[in-house]
Image (cartoon, rainbow, N blue to C red):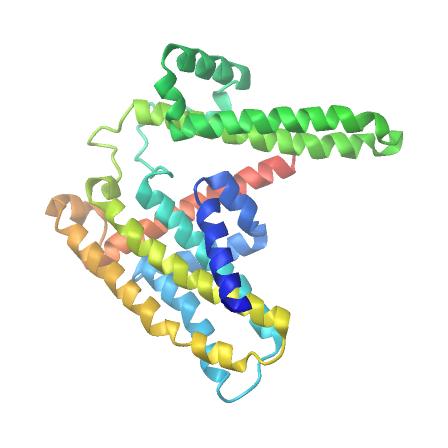
Length: 325
């Protein structure tokens, strides 16, 4: 196995592991806020074919660059930009896959009387309730959101112990910034615990027909294997470009070969649209009509795009709130 093949295989293994939960995924990619805003803008501009349009628009410049390597050498700044674009794309398709698998919850139409907010959940009350319920029913501890909460609690305790251990060694003039850095970490952990607890409450109080997301009414989970295949190709592109940027010589042939992935990924995007066409047939025509205009497959793709935009906007708001604390 060549060094490039090892890089591709190793990166894909790490990404699959990281995509098991949102905290690990965010930690792996660390997409900057500015980049997230840029992707929100691109997603918002995908008004015809939604998420599929966004994917095509992001991939096309990359493959155009790869085609150009047949005739000219590429600057490492150009390669670096494409690594950034492919990283953001891969992250977003992984988020889409998490929605399809159900590990991220689809939004629901909020009823007027609903005023529930995750900020209303006290950290201590959550832990007391979780521990009590696990004691009464050990099976409850196998719930993914419960596992995430327990992981968060363990991380909180480790960070707290580290802070207590290091604090006496910090100079007086640096103590305030030292404590603030740990406070930011604590706030992030507590916020994640609250969100996972909110997901448990949502699971235990299933949506009624009048506020259920239209994507919950179709076989959305069937897209997960297809999205995994898309992710694997995008990951290969990202890994290969990163390898080229690091090696910097004798890489033209590698880039030309990578251009051959274009047909595969575009075929998968066509398959995605066909799946959405099939999903639209599962819906009541009036329900579909009420959801929006345009051909049914494009409508479904736009609805998924909207879910991802809302997710990214929420993530940004969380980051900003933590940054100002």
